[in-house]
Length: 209
Image 1: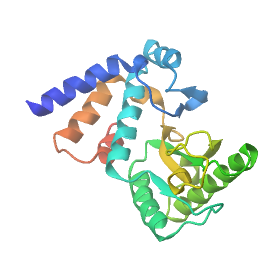
Image 2: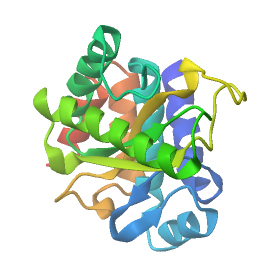
Image 3: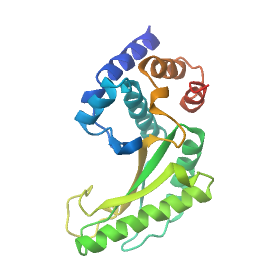
């Protein structure tokens, strides 16, 4: 009964796909964080793909740490950052149907323009490390126009928690079509996962056969 309730809840999530928010970009630059564009996907029969991506994003955040931190004015990945990124790489490699974006952030020390560049350098450092672990480069995006604009701790001073990158699901992997993930198929994928029929990565791969 608990499994059935989860599947029913996931079906409702698909039906409400146009009202939910999460960060990311679908093919053709369709953002699934924008309600009107989510509605477009639902109306064109791709609402299940929105819910599928949202669920994978949630699962990724639950399974592995998504954030790594940096020393002041640095892009160096210390031992802890490398440990976290190895976990991320394993998860990304196993989940072949989606691609990921790395968001770079800084603290508020320094100019906005410099911090935007620094945030991008941090994002690229993470992407390069993930690629070195075996993640295909075409499944990663280094992105940062965020700089100092989204602090974890709102302070003008040096703050390690603000000097970070965040990795998240951004859309479907190359050669994967959103239309492959209609509502019915997304429910099957999630149902297999919660019933213990395999991990989400293997279930998603099966759904494409």
